[in-house]
Length: 282
Image 1 (cartoon, rainbow, N blue to C red):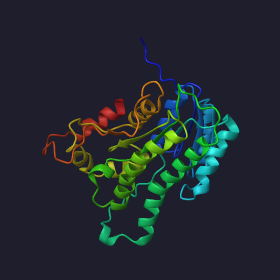
Image 2 (tube, rainbow, N blue to C red):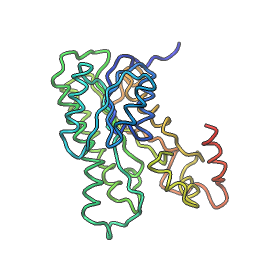
Image 3 (cartoon, rainbow, N blue to C red):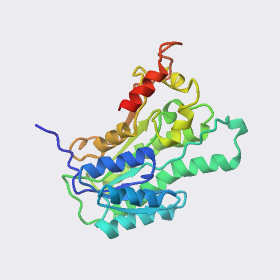
Image 4 (cartoon, one colour):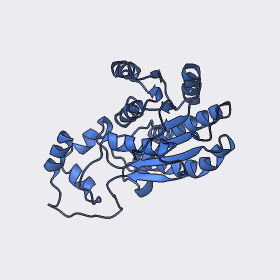
């Protein structure tokens, strides 16, 4: 018997939907027949054009999620356009490419990365939960779902990116707490976290194109391949599904090819060009 996701007709908010992973999430949920509330940081028009070109049932908003009112406005947009928000994907984030050790980090960069990645996620979660408190259509067979996009940096750390690692690690505190708080608003509500590893997105491509970068990344992964945005999107879709993950809450799913905090492969074991060729075929 074919598995059904139960997502058709649900109202899904995705922050950072104009990025590589966020865009893949939007396409995945649109394919399930969802009504989309899509947030863009600065690329609202290209996102709006894509939604129209692909005939998504969607509304688009934008704003800086460091400002708590941006998340509130996105929830209000979902309520105004579709009558509510059933699924919230707190995906927006920032990864500064430059590697800078903590001893050399300036105050502004520390604050920016923490505010974008951790506080932005917290404001989004708060707005979603506050929106649930105003709902009158809680359905036992569905249950609200919040899924956050973390990172393997929050699990293993990442030299030169201390603030990013700290921000993503902080999502564990949100995860473990909000899974208990959401059920006071929706007794069937769930909260989960997806942790991508190295994923080929516009944000990460420059770093991955540096000589030796792919070999270095893959040395800690038994699966000698890089993730695509669609790999992350499908994991989030499964965790958001009221059928496939009905009894899954408070869980962190790592999507990183089996990455561990130890070296798996030695010099010469990884063919970076073959990895690139496979990506182009996929």
